[in-house]
Length: 397
Ligand code: ADP
Ligand code: MG
Image (tube, rainbow, N blue to C red; front, side, top):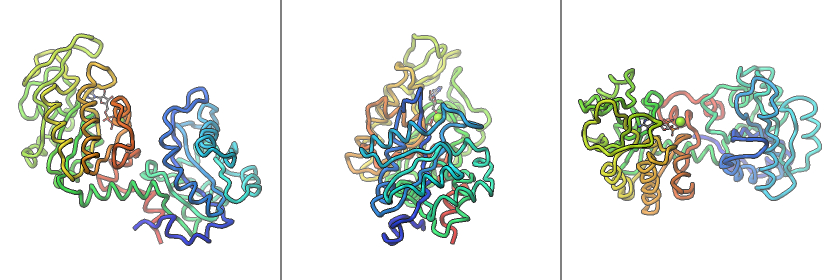
């Protein structure tokens, strides 16, 4: 069990500094923040700590700078956080370790919030350097991790530094993520429907191996579907095939073929730049590439998802090359059916960077799913049962 911030007595926070690892890795262009969901999801934990009289020290990475790089600064993020909270208690300091930071923390009033500069300005962060870890730990009394999406990494802020804290806790959003993902991994509400698409079968195999035995249906779309179809002997033209994982797909079809649904009509074109496209049924003609599931498949899949009763639906990976409007229909329909399933009482989970983009394209908001998993790689690793150093670090006694 994860020990979370609400498991610690309220009084223990009063007057203490809390080092909180967050994932504020948002897109910033010329100082303007794009999607700020990752900032908003940390709010409950930040406010919980601040209200109990803690000094809240927020640490994150942003992008992959190797050294100081103004375009990867967290300063605009601190500003946005202040706007969201509607108060002036948020400040920023332009480093994440050292005396300047320590002085700043000393001067904070109880309940103030300080955003540290990008952890990755120091290479020691990704190297899990012990001296750097120690310096991070010098900043605070209590360690909180609310960044599930970086918990598969053994970095100083997610792993090394925890060794120097006596109290290590999970924040609310990390806890929710672990609870939802554990539910679908171990005991999904039935019927359990998994929808998988996108292009990277490789990254999804581990998760699928764990989910397939528990799932009642696996709906396959996106480029991933063509490797499955080819393995079944359907002609796939020039559609994207993952030769490397052909053997795995063949095995999965043999073991679970009766619950795997594949597209039987497709939107095809001769190249990604060709603006003309057509709908084909069955085999894909030579030289053609499938870029979206066809209308019949889309209806069939949507009915499966939208009619999933009081079960669970997990969706990862778009049904087609949705970035181009002409190939977005299949994906948009799945997104809308996910919302329908949610309103009808299913537990619905969505994960994957591109899938979340697709939800936006479809106009389905994050409040129309039970849980939005921002984990990306971490989510798939967790579902695959692979090691999660950041979680192990806070569970350690
Ligand atoms: P996620 O980020 O949600 O995990 P992936 O990264 O696996 O999803 O896949 C998303 C990408 O897959 C998108 O860029 C999309 O254009 C591409 N894609 C989906 N279907 C096809 C297809 N039939 N052919 C080529 N690319 C596709
Ligand atoms: Mg992706």
